Length: 127
Image 1 (spheres, rainbow, N blue to C red):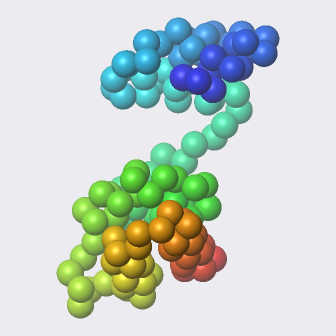
Image 2 (cartoon, rainbow, N blue to C red; image 1 turned 120 degrees about the vertical axis):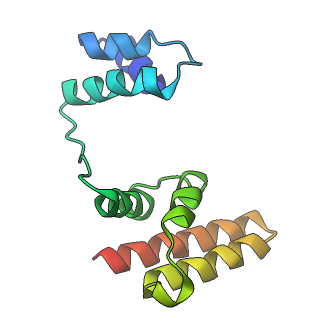
């Protein structure tokens, strides 16, 4: 919503963008999502639409590794998708170990460095 407000304030008055800018801050995702998708389309942003759970998970990894999806938005879906230990791939093993390191880190700079290592591991695995 903030992006839409900034776009309107700068003079961009596309109908979909104005609708998003006018949303209440406490709007639910179900109310906001179709409007935001319309706004992005109006701005020429082509979003990938995953066709199954595997494609959705790959998009999640891409968003985390390449687009700086916040760790708090990555953690729960990652755990939900995570197979049992003996079925995990190398990336999943690496991320689990790094999540453990992150859990034990106390210094904010150290936590940031671990998250950056996680992002790099994802980028390397997807490259």
